[in-house]
Amino acid sequence: MSEPTTPALELKGLSKAYGKFTALHAVDLTIRPGEIFALLGPNGAGKTTLIGSVCGLVKKSAGTMKVFGKDLDVDPTGPRYQVGLVPQEINFDPFFSVAESLRIQQGYYGQPRDDARIDEVLTALNLQAKKDSLTRALSGGMKRRLLIAKALVHRPKLVFLDEPTAGVDVELRRDLWTYVKKIASEGTTIVLTTHYLEEAEELADRVGIINEGKLLMTEDKAALLRRFGEKRLVVTFSEPQAAMPAAGARFAASLSADGRTLTYVERDNCAPSGELLRSLYADGLPISEVETRRSRLEDVLIEILRGRPSQAA
Amino acid sequence: MNVLGMQTLFAKEVRRFMRVPGQTVLSPLISTTLYFIVFGYSISGRVHEVEGHPYLHFIVPGLVFLGIANNAFLNSSSSLFITKIQGTVVDLLVAPLGPGELMVGFIGGAMVRGLVVGLLTWIVAAVFSGFSLEHPLATLYFLMLSSYVFSVLGMLAAVWAEKFEQINFFPTFVMLPLTFLGGVFYSVRELPSPWNHISLFNPMVYMVEGLRYGMLGSSLFSPLVGGAILALTAAVATGVTYAVLRSGYKMKA
Image 1 (cartoon, chains in turn purple, cyan):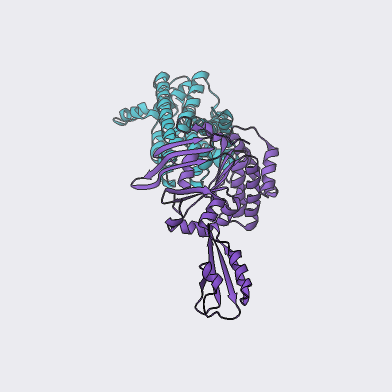
Image 2 (cartoon, chains in turn purple, blue):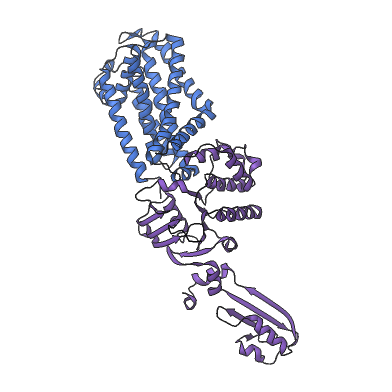
Protein backbone atom coordinates (compact mmCIF):
# COMPACT_ATOMS: atom_id res chain seq x y z
CA MET A 1 0.00 0.00 0.00
CA SER A 2 1.49 3.37 -0.94
CA GLU A 3 1.85 5.90 1.87
CA PRO A 4 -0.08 9.15 1.44
CA THR A 5 2.34 11.97 0.69
CA THR A 6 0.58 14.95 2.29
CA PRO A 7 1.39 15.13 6.00
CA ALA A 8 -1.46 15.56 8.44
CA LEU A 9 0.56 18.27 10.12
CA GLU A 10 3.72 20.01 9.00
CA LEU A 11 5.45 22.58 11.18
CA LYS A 12 8.49 24.49 10.01
CA GLY A 13 10.41 26.84 12.26
CA LEU A 14 7.46 27.23 14.60
CA SER A 15 8.43 29.67 17.33
CA LYS A 16 6.55 31.36 20.11
CA ALA A 17 7.94 34.01 22.42
CA TYR A 18 6.21 35.65 25.37
CA GLY A 19 8.31 38.78 25.79
CA LYS A 20 11.83 37.59 26.53
CA PHE A 21 10.72 34.03 27.26
CA THR A 22 10.79 31.70 24.29
CA ALA A 23 8.26 28.92 24.67
CA LEU A 24 8.98 27.30 21.29
CA HIS A 25 12.30 27.39 19.46
CA ALA A 26 11.91 26.93 15.69
CA VAL A 27 10.19 23.56 15.91
CA ASP A 28 10.15 21.42 12.77
CA LEU A 29 7.74 18.52 12.94
CA THR A 30 5.91 16.36 10.45
CA ILE A 31 3.04 14.12 11.49
CA ARG A 32 2.02 11.41 9.06
CA PRO A 33 -1.64 10.81 8.31
CA GLY A 34 -3.15 8.03 10.39
CA GLU A 35 -0.39 7.79 12.95
CA ILE A 36 -0.62 8.22 16.71
CA PHE A 37 2.12 10.61 17.71
CA ALA A 38 2.94 11.15 21.37
CA LEU A 39 4.56 14.46 22.25
CA LEU A 40 6.33 14.01 25.56
CA GLY A 41 8.17 16.32 27.87
CA PRO A 42 8.12 17.79 31.35
CA ASN A 43 5.76 20.53 32.51
CA GLY A 44 6.44 23.80 30.70
CA ALA A 45 8.30 22.06 27.88
CA GLY A 46 6.12 23.66 25.18
CA LYS A 47 3.69 20.83 24.38
CA THR A 48 0.52 22.82 24.98
CA THR A 49 1.95 25.91 23.27
CA LEU A 50 2.69 23.83 20.19
CA ILE A 51 -0.80 22.35 20.13
CA GLY A 52 -2.36 25.73 20.89
CA SER A 53 -0.52 27.32 17.96
CA VAL A 54 -1.96 24.81 15.53
CA CYS A 55 -5.44 24.98 17.06
CA GLY A 56 -5.70 28.76 16.99
CA LEU A 57 -5.36 29.34 20.72
CA VAL A 58 -1.85 30.77 20.57
CA LYS A 59 -0.45 33.44 18.23
CA LYS A 60 2.78 32.06 16.85
CA SER A 61 5.80 34.35 16.61
CA ALA A 62 7.33 32.74 13.51
CA GLY A 63 7.22 29.72 11.28
CA THR A 64 4.66 27.97 9.13
CA MET A 65 1.95 25.45 9.99
CA LYS A 66 0.22 23.26 7.44
CA VAL A 67 -2.73 21.01 8.18
CA PHE A 68 -3.24 18.40 5.46
CA GLY A 69 -1.12 20.61 3.18
CA LYS A 70 -3.08 23.81 3.81
CA ASP A 71 -1.13 26.73 5.22
CA LEU A 72 -2.88 28.22 8.25
CA ASP A 73 -1.43 31.65 7.40
CA VAL A 74 -3.19 31.55 4.04
CA ASP A 75 -6.43 29.96 5.27
CA PRO A 76 -6.74 30.21 9.07
CA THR A 77 -10.16 28.57 9.35
CA GLY A 78 -10.60 26.15 6.44
CA PRO A 79 -8.25 23.43 7.74
CA ARG A 80 -9.93 23.58 11.16
CA TYR A 81 -12.94 21.65 9.86
CA GLN A 82 -10.58 18.66 10.09
CA VAL A 83 -9.24 19.38 13.58
CA GLY A 84 -10.45 18.39 17.03
CA LEU A 85 -8.90 19.31 20.37
CA VAL A 86 -9.27 17.90 23.85
CA PRO A 87 -7.88 20.78 25.91
CA GLN A 88 -5.94 20.24 29.08
CA GLU A 89 -8.31 22.31 31.22
CA ILE A 90 -11.86 21.10 31.80
CA ASN A 91 -14.46 23.52 30.50
CA PHE A 92 -18.21 23.26 30.13
CA ASP A 93 -21.17 25.47 29.39
CA PRO A 94 -23.56 25.07 32.33
CA PHE A 95 -26.61 26.17 30.35
CA PHE A 96 -26.67 23.09 28.12
CA SER A 97 -27.06 19.34 28.41
CA VAL A 98 -24.48 16.83 27.22
CA ALA A 99 -26.37 16.15 23.97
CA GLU A 100 -26.98 19.84 23.34
CA SER A 101 -23.29 20.60 23.84
CA LEU A 102 -22.44 17.99 21.22
CA ARG A 103 -25.07 19.29 18.78
CA ILE A 104 -23.62 22.78 19.19
CA GLN A 105 -20.17 21.40 18.51
CA GLN A 106 -21.38 19.70 15.32
CA GLY A 107 -22.90 23.02 14.21
CA TYR A 108 -19.69 24.96 14.87
CA TYR A 109 -17.98 22.61 12.44
CA GLY A 110 -20.60 23.20 9.78
CA GLN A 111 -22.28 19.84 10.25
CA PRO A 112 -26.04 19.35 10.46
CA ARG A 113 -27.51 17.71 13.53
CA ASP A 114 -26.53 14.04 13.65
CA ASP A 115 -27.97 12.31 16.70
CA ALA A 116 -26.74 8.90 15.59
CA ARG A 117 -23.16 10.17 15.69
CA ILE A 118 -23.75 11.74 19.10
CA ASP A 119 -25.07 8.41 20.42
CA GLU A 120 -22.07 6.60 18.94
CA VAL A 121 -19.55 8.88 20.64
CA LEU A 122 -21.43 8.92 23.95
CA THR A 123 -21.64 5.14 23.95
CA ALA A 124 -17.95 4.78 23.15
CA LEU A 125 -17.07 7.05 26.05
CA ASN A 126 -19.59 5.47 28.42
CA LEU A 127 -21.55 8.72 28.73
CA GLN A 128 -24.84 7.66 27.16
CA ALA A 129 -26.67 7.60 30.51
CA LYS A 130 -25.87 11.28 31.02
CA LYS A 131 -27.00 12.36 27.55
CA ASP A 132 -29.77 14.63 28.83
CA SER A 133 -28.03 15.80 32.01
CA LEU A 134 -26.91 19.39 32.31
CA THR A 135 -23.15 19.59 32.02
CA ARG A 136 -22.84 21.26 35.42
CA ALA A 137 -24.32 18.14 37.02
CA LEU A 138 -21.51 15.90 35.73
CA SER A 139 -18.66 14.65 37.90
CA GLY A 140 -15.09 15.67 37.05
CA GLY A 141 -14.44 12.43 35.19
CA MET A 142 -17.68 12.77 33.25
CA LYS A 143 -16.80 16.32 32.28
CA ARG A 144 -13.50 15.01 30.95
CA ARG A 145 -15.39 12.41 28.91
CA LEU A 146 -17.59 15.18 27.54
CA LEU A 147 -14.52 17.16 26.47
CA ILE A 148 -13.31 14.14 24.56
CA ALA A 149 -16.74 13.61 22.99
CA LYS A 150 -16.84 17.26 21.92
CA ALA A 151 -13.45 16.94 20.25
CA LEU A 152 -14.49 13.86 18.29
CA VAL A 153 -18.17 14.34 17.48
CA HIS A 154 -17.52 16.10 14.17
CA ARG A 155 -15.29 13.27 12.93
CA PRO A 156 -12.04 15.25 12.73
CA LYS A 157 -9.17 13.82 10.73
CA LEU A 158 -6.55 15.32 13.05
CA VAL A 159 -7.16 15.12 16.79
CA PHE A 160 -5.07 16.72 19.51
CA LEU A 161 -5.40 15.08 22.91
CA ASP A 162 -3.69 17.37 25.42
CA GLU A 163 -3.40 15.25 28.55
CA PRO A 164 -6.82 13.75 27.95
CA THR A 165 -6.80 11.42 30.93
CA ALA A 166 -5.31 13.73 33.55
CA GLY A 167 -7.00 13.01 36.87
CA VAL A 168 -9.46 10.44 35.58
CA ASP A 169 -10.13 6.88 36.62
CA VAL A 170 -8.68 3.76 35.09
CA GLU A 171 -11.97 2.92 33.41
CA LEU A 172 -12.03 6.11 31.34
CA ARG A 173 -8.40 5.67 30.48
CA ARG A 174 -9.12 2.20 29.13
CA ASP A 175 -12.27 3.41 27.32
CA LEU A 176 -10.33 6.22 25.72
CA TRP A 177 -7.44 4.01 24.69
CA THR A 178 -9.81 1.60 23.04
CA TYR A 179 -11.60 4.41 21.20
CA VAL A 180 -8.39 6.15 20.15
CA LYS A 181 -7.09 2.90 18.69
CA LYS A 182 -10.38 2.43 16.86
CA ILE A 183 -10.46 5.89 15.26
CA ALA A 184 -6.74 5.66 14.44
CA SER A 185 -7.39 2.37 12.67
CA GLU A 186 -10.03 4.21 10.65
CA GLY A 187 -7.45 6.77 9.49
CA THR A 188 -7.65 9.54 12.09
CA THR A 189 -4.34 11.12 13.00
CA ILE A 190 -3.79 11.55 16.73
CA VAL A 191 -1.35 13.88 18.47
CA LEU A 192 -1.20 13.02 22.15
CA THR A 193 0.46 14.66 25.11
CA THR A 194 0.38 12.87 28.40
CA HIS A 195 2.16 12.57 31.69
CA TYR A 196 1.07 8.94 31.90
CA LEU A 197 3.85 7.42 29.84
CA GLU A 198 2.10 4.10 30.05
CA GLU A 199 -0.54 5.78 27.88
CA ALA A 200 1.98 6.87 25.26
CA GLU A 201 3.60 3.43 25.36
CA GLU A 202 0.24 1.78 24.85
CA LEU A 203 -0.95 4.01 22.04
CA ALA A 204 1.83 5.77 20.18
CA ASP A 205 3.35 4.75 16.87
CA ARG A 206 5.90 7.52 17.08
CA VAL A 207 7.23 9.66 19.89
CA GLY A 208 8.55 13.21 19.99
CA ILE A 209 10.42 14.56 22.98
CA ILE A 210 10.32 18.25 23.70
CA ASN A 211 12.06 20.18 26.44
CA GLU A 212 12.44 23.91 27.03
CA GLY A 213 10.66 24.61 23.77
CA LYS A 214 13.06 22.54 21.67
CA LEU A 215 12.03 19.35 19.94
CA LEU A 216 14.88 17.05 20.94
CA MET A 217 13.94 14.10 18.79
CA THR A 218 11.20 12.20 17.03
CA GLU A 219 11.39 8.48 16.54
CA ASP A 220 9.36 5.36 16.06
CA LYS A 221 8.38 4.20 19.55
CA ALA A 222 9.60 0.65 19.15
CA ALA A 223 12.93 1.80 17.70
CA LEU A 224 13.32 4.34 20.48
CA LEU A 225 12.74 1.72 23.14
CA ARG A 226 15.21 -0.59 21.40
CA ARG A 227 17.86 2.10 21.04
CA PHE A 228 17.53 3.84 24.37
CA GLY A 229 15.93 1.11 26.40
CA GLU A 230 17.59 -1.70 28.25
CA LYS A 231 16.71 -5.05 29.72
CA ARG A 232 18.05 -5.77 33.17
CA LEU A 233 18.65 -9.40 34.22
CA VAL A 234 19.15 -9.98 37.93
CA VAL A 235 20.21 -13.50 39.02
CA THR A 236 20.23 -14.40 42.71
CA PHE A 237 22.41 -17.29 43.90
CA SER A 238 21.46 -19.52 46.81
CA GLU A 239 25.14 -19.56 47.85
CA PRO A 240 27.44 -16.53 47.64
CA GLN A 241 30.02 -16.57 44.83
CA ALA A 242 33.59 -15.80 45.80
CA ALA A 243 34.35 -14.36 42.37
CA MET A 244 32.57 -13.34 39.20
CA PRO A 245 31.49 -16.52 37.40
CA ALA A 246 33.21 -17.03 34.03
CA ALA A 247 29.96 -16.60 32.08
CA GLY A 248 29.26 -13.34 33.90
CA ALA A 249 32.72 -12.06 33.04
CA ARG A 250 32.21 -12.90 29.34
CA PHE A 251 29.00 -10.84 29.29
CA ALA A 252 30.48 -7.98 31.36
CA ALA A 253 27.90 -8.50 34.11
CA SER A 254 28.42 -7.21 37.65
CA LEU A 255 28.47 -9.14 40.90
CA SER A 256 27.23 -7.66 44.16
CA ALA A 257 29.65 -7.22 47.05
CA ASP A 258 28.07 -10.11 48.96
CA GLY A 259 28.46 -12.36 45.93
CA ARG A 260 24.80 -13.29 45.90
CA THR A 261 23.47 -11.18 43.03
CA LEU A 262 24.61 -10.95 39.43
CA THR A 263 23.26 -8.14 37.29
CA TYR A 264 23.44 -7.88 33.49
CA VAL A 265 22.25 -4.82 31.56
CA GLU A 266 21.25 -5.68 28.01
CA ARG A 267 21.16 -2.74 25.62
CA ASP A 268 20.74 -2.56 21.86
CA ASN A 269 23.54 -4.49 20.09
CA CYS A 270 24.45 -6.41 23.27
CA ALA A 271 24.25 -10.16 23.66
CA PRO A 272 20.79 -11.30 24.73
CA SER A 273 20.39 -11.90 28.45
CA GLY A 274 18.95 -15.36 27.69
CA GLU A 275 22.38 -16.47 26.49
CA LEU A 276 23.96 -15.44 29.78
CA LEU A 277 21.25 -17.26 31.70
CA ARG A 278 21.82 -20.43 29.67
CA SER A 279 25.56 -20.22 30.34
CA LEU A 280 25.02 -19.78 34.06
CA TYR A 281 22.78 -22.85 34.17
CA ALA A 282 25.22 -24.80 32.00
CA ASP A 283 28.04 -23.96 34.43
CA GLY A 284 25.92 -25.46 37.24
CA LEU A 285 25.73 -22.33 39.35
CA PRO A 286 23.24 -22.41 42.28
CA ILE A 287 20.57 -20.09 40.85
CA SER A 288 17.65 -19.49 43.21
CA GLU A 289 15.84 -16.60 41.53
CA VAL A 290 15.80 -14.84 38.17
CA GLU A 291 14.27 -11.45 37.55
CA THR A 292 14.12 -9.43 34.36
CA ARG A 293 12.90 -5.90 33.87
CA ARG A 294 12.58 -4.10 30.53
CA SER A 295 12.91 -0.31 30.29
CA ARG A 296 9.70 1.50 29.77
CA LEU A 297 9.13 4.73 27.91
CA GLU A 298 9.33 6.52 31.23
CA ASP A 299 12.92 5.36 31.76
CA VAL A 300 13.82 6.31 28.19
CA LEU A 301 12.32 9.78 28.56
CA ILE A 302 14.27 10.40 31.75
CA GLU A 303 17.45 9.20 30.07
CA ILE A 304 16.95 11.54 27.12
CA LEU A 305 16.00 14.54 29.22
CA ARG A 306 19.09 13.96 31.33
CA GLY A 307 21.04 13.95 28.07
CA ARG A 308 22.43 10.51 27.37
CA PRO A 309 24.42 11.56 24.32
CA SER A 310 26.17 8.25 23.68
CA GLN A 311 22.91 6.66 22.65
CA ALA A 312 21.50 9.54 20.67
CA ALA A 313 21.15 9.17 16.93
CA MET B 1 -18.10 31.27 5.18
CA ASN B 2 -19.29 28.81 7.84
CA VAL B 3 -23.03 29.58 7.65
CA LEU B 4 -24.11 26.64 9.79
CA GLY B 5 -21.49 27.49 12.41
CA MET B 6 -22.75 31.06 12.51
CA GLN B 7 -26.38 29.93 12.81
CA THR B 8 -25.43 27.52 15.57
CA LEU B 9 -23.68 30.20 17.59
CA PHE B 10 -26.61 32.59 17.09
CA ALA B 11 -29.17 29.94 18.15
CA LYS B 12 -27.02 29.02 21.14
CA GLU B 13 -26.83 32.65 22.23
CA VAL B 14 -30.60 33.04 22.04
CA ARG B 15 -31.19 29.76 23.88
CA ARG B 16 -28.69 30.79 26.54
CA PHE B 17 -30.58 33.90 27.58
CA MET B 18 -33.95 32.21 27.13
CA ARG B 19 -32.85 29.57 29.66
CA VAL B 20 -32.92 32.26 32.36
CA PRO B 21 -35.77 34.56 31.22
CA GLY B 22 -36.36 35.87 34.73
CA GLN B 23 -32.85 37.29 34.79
CA THR B 24 -32.46 38.30 31.15
CA VAL B 25 -35.92 39.49 30.10
CA LEU B 26 -38.28 39.84 33.06
CA SER B 27 -35.87 41.64 35.40
CA PRO B 28 -34.95 44.44 32.94
CA LEU B 29 -38.57 44.68 31.87
CA ILE B 30 -39.66 45.23 35.48
CA SER B 31 -36.89 47.83 36.04
CA THR B 32 -37.84 49.78 32.93
CA THR B 33 -41.52 49.54 33.74
CA LEU B 34 -40.81 50.87 37.24
CA TYR B 35 -38.99 53.82 35.67
CA PHE B 36 -42.08 54.42 33.58
CA ILE B 37 -44.47 54.25 36.52
CA VAL B 38 -42.34 56.16 39.06
CA PHE B 39 -40.99 58.90 36.77
CA GLY B 40 -44.03 59.04 34.56
CA TYR B 41 -46.67 59.29 37.23
CA SER B 42 -44.67 61.33 39.75
CA ILE B 43 -43.60 63.96 37.21
CA SER B 44 -46.55 63.93 34.82
CA GLY B 45 -48.71 65.43 37.55
CA ARG B 46 -46.57 68.58 37.45
CA VAL B 47 -45.16 68.48 33.93
CA HIS B 48 -48.05 67.95 31.58
CA GLU B 49 -46.28 68.38 28.24
CA VAL B 50 -42.71 68.19 27.00
CA GLU B 51 -41.90 69.26 23.43
CA GLY B 52 -45.60 69.14 22.62
CA HIS B 53 -46.18 65.58 23.92
CA PRO B 54 -47.82 64.41 27.14
CA TYR B 55 -45.02 63.51 29.56
CA LEU B 56 -46.02 59.83 29.72
CA HIS B 57 -45.79 59.63 25.93
CA PHE B 58 -42.57 61.63 25.84
CA ILE B 59 -40.57 59.18 27.98
CA VAL B 60 -41.64 56.00 26.13
CA PRO B 61 -39.04 56.15 23.29
CA GLY B 62 -36.23 56.84 25.77
CA LEU B 63 -37.26 53.91 27.96
CA VAL B 64 -37.50 51.58 24.98
CA PHE B 65 -34.04 52.74 23.92
CA LEU B 66 -32.75 52.19 27.46
CA GLY B 67 -34.09 48.63 27.45
CA ILE B 68 -32.56 47.87 24.08
CA ALA B 69 -29.17 49.46 24.74
CA ASN B 70 -28.66 47.95 28.18
CA ASN B 71 -29.76 44.45 27.30
CA ALA B 72 -28.03 44.24 23.96
CA PHE B 73 -24.80 45.36 25.62
CA LEU B 74 -25.20 43.11 28.63
CA ASN B 75 -25.95 40.03 26.56
CA SER B 76 -22.97 40.14 24.24
CA SER B 77 -20.57 41.37 26.92
CA SER B 78 -21.57 38.85 29.59
CA SER B 79 -21.87 35.91 27.21
CA LEU B 80 -18.48 36.34 25.57
CA PHE B 81 -16.78 37.31 28.83
CA ILE B 82 -18.14 34.26 30.66
CA THR B 83 -17.08 32.13 27.70
CA LYS B 84 -13.56 33.44 28.24
CA ILE B 85 -13.67 32.93 32.00
CA GLN B 86 -15.10 29.39 31.93
CA GLY B 87 -12.75 28.35 29.13
CA THR B 88 -15.36 27.40 26.53
CA VAL B 89 -13.86 30.08 24.29
CA VAL B 90 -11.52 27.24 23.28
CA ASP B 91 -14.45 25.64 21.43
CA LEU B 92 -14.94 28.81 19.40
CA LEU B 93 -11.27 29.42 18.66
CA VAL B 94 -10.51 25.87 17.55
CA ALA B 95 -13.64 25.63 15.39
CA PRO B 96 -13.69 27.04 11.85
CA LEU B 97 -15.31 30.28 12.98
CA GLY B 98 -13.64 33.49 11.82
CA PRO B 99 -14.22 36.99 13.23
CA GLY B 100 -17.23 37.51 10.96
CA GLU B 101 -18.98 34.32 12.11
CA LEU B 102 -18.26 35.09 15.77
CA MET B 103 -19.66 38.60 15.39
CA VAL B 104 -22.84 37.47 13.66
CA GLY B 105 -23.46 34.83 16.33
CA PHE B 106 -22.83 36.97 19.39
CA ILE B 107 -24.27 40.21 18.03
CA GLY B 108 -27.33 38.49 16.57
CA GLY B 109 -28.13 36.86 19.91
CA ALA B 110 -27.62 40.11 21.81
CA MET B 111 -29.79 42.05 19.36
CA VAL B 112 -32.62 39.59 19.89
CA ARG B 113 -32.46 40.05 23.66
CA GLY B 114 -32.25 43.86 23.35
CA LEU B 115 -35.18 43.97 20.95
CA VAL B 116 -37.28 41.56 23.02
CA VAL B 117 -36.83 43.72 26.13
CA GLY B 118 -37.32 46.95 24.14
CA LEU B 119 -40.49 45.74 22.45
CA LEU B 120 -41.94 44.34 25.69
CA THR B 121 -41.21 47.69 27.35
CA TRP B 122 -43.04 49.40 24.50
CA ILE B 123 -46.03 47.09 24.94
CA VAL B 124 -46.14 47.74 28.71
CA ALA B 125 -45.85 51.48 28.08
CA ALA B 126 -48.67 51.29 25.54
CA VAL B 127 -50.93 49.90 28.24
CA PHE B 128 -50.34 53.04 30.34
CA SER B 129 -49.99 55.73 27.71
CA GLY B 130 -51.47 54.37 24.51
CA PHE B 131 -49.64 53.21 21.38
CA SER B 132 -47.97 55.66 19.05
CA LEU B 133 -46.01 54.88 15.89
CA GLU B 134 -45.70 57.83 13.53
CA HIS B 135 -42.81 56.76 11.30
CA PRO B 136 -42.53 52.96 11.22
CA LEU B 137 -39.44 52.81 9.01
CA ALA B 138 -37.53 55.34 11.09
CA THR B 139 -38.58 53.47 14.24
CA LEU B 140 -37.41 50.18 12.78
CA TYR B 141 -34.10 51.76 11.75
CA PHE B 142 -33.42 53.15 15.21
CA LEU B 143 -34.55 49.99 17.01
CA MET B 144 -32.40 47.73 14.87
CA LEU B 145 -29.33 49.92 14.71
CA SER B 146 -29.42 50.80 18.42
CA SER B 147 -29.54 47.14 19.35
CA TYR B 148 -26.76 46.41 16.83
CA VAL B 149 -24.44 49.16 18.04
CA PHE B 150 -24.73 48.22 21.70
CA SER B 151 -24.32 44.53 20.93
CA VAL B 152 -21.07 45.27 19.11
CA LEU B 153 -19.85 47.52 21.91
CA GLY B 154 -20.68 44.78 24.41
CA MET B 155 -18.63 42.31 22.43
CA LEU B 156 -15.72 44.71 22.28
CA ALA B 157 -15.90 45.25 26.05
CA ALA B 158 -15.89 41.48 26.62
CA VAL B 159 -12.80 41.01 24.46
CA TRP B 160 -10.99 43.71 26.41
CA ALA B 161 -12.11 42.75 29.93
CA GLU B 162 -10.11 40.34 32.03
CA LYS B 163 -11.99 40.78 35.31
CA PHE B 164 -15.65 41.09 36.29
CA GLU B 165 -14.89 44.58 37.54
CA GLN B 166 -13.81 45.60 34.05
CA ILE B 167 -16.88 44.16 32.36
CA ASN B 168 -19.06 46.25 34.70
CA PHE B 169 -17.10 49.39 33.92
CA PHE B 170 -18.92 50.26 30.67
CA PRO B 171 -22.53 49.87 31.80
CA THR B 172 -21.91 51.59 35.14
CA PHE B 173 -19.54 54.39 34.27
CA VAL B 174 -20.25 55.03 30.59
CA MET B 175 -23.67 53.82 29.50
CA LEU B 176 -25.71 54.63 32.58
CA PRO B 177 -24.61 58.31 32.83
CA LEU B 178 -24.84 58.84 29.08
CA THR B 179 -28.33 57.35 28.80
CA PHE B 180 -29.69 59.10 31.90
CA LEU B 181 -28.17 62.37 30.66
CA GLY B 182 -29.29 61.59 27.14
CA GLY B 183 -32.77 63.08 27.32
CA VAL B 184 -34.64 59.91 28.27
CA PHE B 185 -36.66 61.65 31.00
CA TYR B 186 -36.43 65.28 29.88
CA SER B 187 -35.80 67.49 26.90
CA VAL B 188 -32.15 68.51 26.73
CA ARG B 189 -33.32 71.89 25.39
CA GLU B 190 -34.77 72.67 28.80
CA LEU B 191 -31.50 72.07 30.62
CA PRO B 192 -29.75 75.17 31.97
CA SER B 193 -26.62 76.41 30.24
CA PRO B 194 -23.93 75.02 29.87
CA TRP B 195 -25.51 71.55 30.30
CA ASN B 196 -27.78 71.96 27.31
CA HIS B 197 -24.71 72.64 25.14
CA ILE B 198 -22.64 69.87 26.73
CA SER B 199 -25.48 67.41 26.11
CA LEU B 200 -25.09 67.97 22.39
CA PHE B 201 -21.83 65.98 22.59
CA ASN B 202 -23.65 62.98 24.02
CA PRO B 203 -24.42 60.61 21.12
CA MET B 204 -27.21 58.98 23.13
CA VAL B 205 -29.21 62.21 22.85
CA TYR B 206 -29.46 61.81 19.08
CA MET B 207 -30.29 58.12 19.30
CA VAL B 208 -33.11 58.76 21.79
CA GLU B 209 -34.39 61.70 19.74
CA GLY B 210 -34.27 59.62 16.58
CA LEU B 211 -36.46 56.97 18.16
CA ARG B 212 -38.72 59.73 19.51
CA TYR B 213 -39.15 60.97 15.96
CA GLY B 214 -40.10 57.52 14.76
CA MET B 215 -42.55 56.81 17.55
CA LEU B 216 -44.00 60.26 18.34
CA GLY B 217 -43.43 62.07 15.07
CA SER B 218 -41.25 64.93 16.26
CA SER B 219 -37.87 65.43 17.86
CA LEU B 220 -35.41 68.14 18.84
CA PHE B 221 -33.04 67.31 16.02
CA SER B 222 -33.40 66.02 12.52
CA PRO B 223 -33.66 62.21 12.67
CA LEU B 224 -31.00 62.21 9.98
CA VAL B 225 -28.45 63.42 12.53
CA GLY B 226 -29.29 60.60 14.94
CA GLY B 227 -29.44 58.14 12.08
CA ALA B 228 -26.04 59.23 10.78
CA ILE B 229 -24.45 59.09 14.23
CA LEU B 230 -25.82 55.59 14.76
CA ALA B 231 -24.65 54.45 11.34
CA LEU B 232 -21.21 55.93 11.88
CA THR B 233 -20.93 54.40 15.37
CA ALA B 234 -22.05 51.05 13.94
CA ALA B 235 -19.48 51.19 11.14
CA VAL B 236 -16.59 52.18 13.40
CA ALA B 237 -17.52 49.67 16.14
CA THR B 238 -17.88 46.89 13.55
CA GLY B 239 -14.52 47.66 11.98
CA VAL B 240 -12.71 47.87 15.30
CA THR B 241 -14.32 44.68 16.65
CA TYR B 242 -13.53 42.75 13.48
CA ALA B 243 -9.91 43.92 13.54
CA VAL B 244 -9.53 43.14 17.24
CA LEU B 245 -10.97 39.64 16.85
CA ARG B 246 -8.83 39.00 13.81
CA SER B 247 -5.70 40.03 15.70
CA GLY B 248 -6.52 37.65 18.55
CA TYR B 249 -6.10 40.50 21.07
CA LYS B 250 -6.85 39.15 24.58
CA MET B 251 -8.47 36.09 23.03
CA LYS B 252 -5.34 34.14 22.10
CA ALA B 253 -2.15 33.72 24.12
